[in-house]
Length: 258
Image (cartoon, rainbow, N blue to C red; front, side):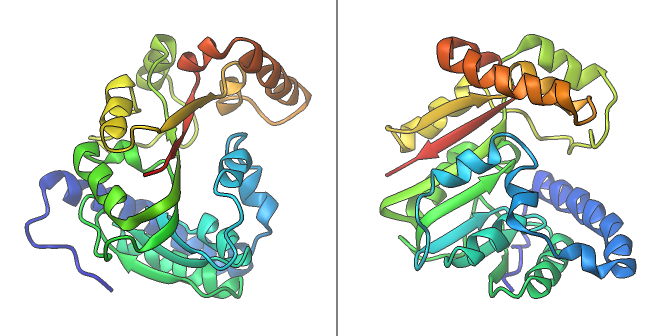
């Protein structure tokens, strides 16, 4: 396991402590019900509307070196390993890595887990063919993280990230003011905005971004059901016909290539 450098900033220490606490709260559940560590691919790919199409942007991963960038609970890492990828997964949180290792073992896949900081990756240049990340870039200094990401991604590689988007003023107000399930956030995280995309494009000039969940962002506070499915279908049509509305969506899927 790679140790975090002693010179880690207060922000990184705060981030690590927050996520360690979140992971430790989950530990009791898996101690009592270890079978819940097992899951099928659909449980991950369908838990948000953007996940499956974003994963498909990675293309065929069998035999490729894939990095799960900020793996958290490592469900994505397990899915990618099941598809035949040689997966390395890192996270800042040691407690989440404990859960991640248990999940990989419970699902019978081999994954190389490393504790690391996304702004200072402990990997050699051009180590990976593909990189996947979900809700991780908005925790980082993108000027540092983008350069590190470019360094470890081989020529012709693809990186795909799913990130909360901050372009909708009403949504920004709701995130600040409203209470809803699983709202907990670290003090320093910030949904991505246009300036963050510009930082990424300085390193990856041909990067693309696609907004997800316009009407269907209401699923964040609604119970699953017929109405939520209608919202999902409506978004498919609306965002295809009026792509300018993507700037007001809840999430953004970012695809980067060297």
